[in-house]
Image 1 (spheres, rainbow, N blue to C red):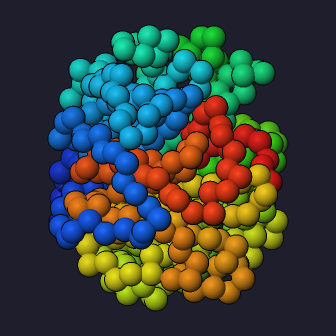
Image 2: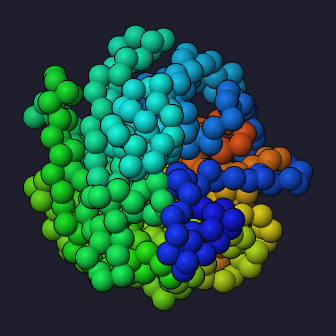
Length: 454
């Protein structure tokens, strides 16, 4: 998830044992986006584009009712998408803190901060881990008045919050957040966040328990990861997860981590238990590969794990048939590899499969929507893949607008929403039977699934 220049700088700095310049853990996802013409399948139409309103990197998305929350490294936007062809910005809220991963529970918005800030306030500036009073972690906002979000509290976590996943438990007046973080770059090497060559470096996921009626009373515990530590960039040794998806009804979490993907039993959400691990030799940290994202099919039968080959800074879609930068479909009960996929077109830009989710179809058929950086957005019939179809045969549709550098693409209530690092938020209409019988949801945090469908 770093540009080649940042990757090279980190490797050189580590080899010379000198201080690494402070950078956000994901770099800045610098483009440029795809410079070529807009291309798409005939069944995918770009309905609208809401250009980004600042120079910051645009990151992940969350949804509630008729609204989309679009995170960015400088804060977040709330957009009214009741007319997907003409979204309206309700608020453009500035609160500095890369990388700006967002989720929503009721009237609360949670924001990940993964680059040391001079303070926990929204007026903070990027700092270093040694800055007195520095902050990394989770910010919590009250959006009861969406035109004027209020910072309620800031919860520090070791190594900050690269991403977070929310498990809502309103029945217990709480939300549980699984916070994933990496000890990469000079900005992250604080006293409680340090990789080592001796194998005793950072190896935790922070579990944050937030009382919904009193978010300021949040508490943090650490879950010690049960996995082998690996060396990344030939310099940093640690274990950490990049992203975690949860499925509340079946008490399961899918963890996409640096060297391995795992399935957890979260019957006790504060004490996960590993059920199985999945890995493939093609996903090699020495090659700057990592397990990156995860999502469950809505019937709970299949887990999709994405690998971010090249760390988000390399052209890993040039050969559609190689084993890099793919989504891997795994049997949720056994951990058995079922199939895998990446876009079936040669893409010369910075490309790997990135953030994705399944379409919630009533009939249980499995259709996945995914981003692919300069490869844009793709839709794939996973059932066809599982039956032996090629990627080209299984792809339902795609869109790659001019300048595409797409961070997240998700299905939500009849449309595909893509938050693009450079373009801002795109909304697409898919006209295909693959969307037949899709359920409408009252909200969606893409890494959180509540009830079985299908």
